[in-house]
Image (spheres, rainbow, N blue to C red):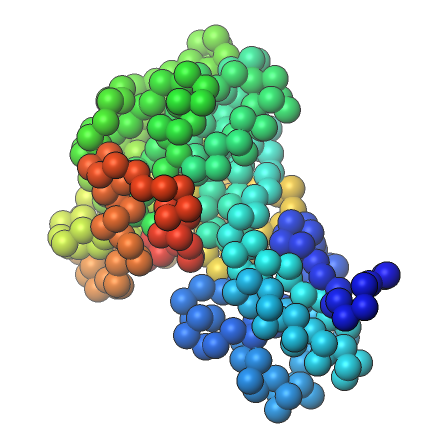
Length: 368
């Protein structure tokens, strides 16, 4: 590796995403202050503030490469110098957590007549989907980075005709209007979430044919609980885009409004009458994943409904037990919750893009 004098070796956030979850994954060392780390960190990272690194350097792993992380790459560069001086192979994460926030990758689920491309926003644990067949595609839960979806559609020869959200998002900014504007696609949303801009309202059990194939449809399943308008999309009878109603490691939070117990009862009803009433071999594809979920290059973040019914005890609990558990797990609302909800609902004009990006930095907090 040829480096300019005084430079430290680096790895880009995209390169790091490509090796995480593989045998070549490095150790992750975050040298930010504990409060920064606690607010938002990469899964599996160890926190040793730069000010303490010299005292704890003997405890840093030496059997594999270490990637060092900070907010923007400055503190971590100094840490890399110290580690390499001690004989520890280390590289700096170029751009730090700010760069990690902008990393996306994709994975594909083949459904015979159709294909689902899972678009993963790695820094936030957000998942969105491009569902395509023949020359047509629908997009579900897009972020503001609309070029990601345009690129996927172009790669597969699809034209984006419809855009959906699974619910009114509170922890990140929705790209439904921006993507519709860029493509001419129609926007379809559940009116129960109180959107204040023009859209096509969804009805329970409404369906849309994809690629002109009447036997391959996307069906709308109104699933209130996380939000009043939460919606699951059943794709071809073989996949469930569950939004924040059901995750691969838990269920959605019913407490993002002020009526946690009532929302919990709705969520229990939605899980039992909509989600887990589907075929056990259907693949659950959520809108988020948590730190405990392993993300592997090219493999979708998802699980069969049958596996989740076995691994998530909450899915077998009676209503009263579920409500007591779920409503008792209330946490603080995500940072900038009100501002993000207001923008996503169309209640306030969107500020500048740079300001929007600042509002949504950090992890998702939608699981119970």
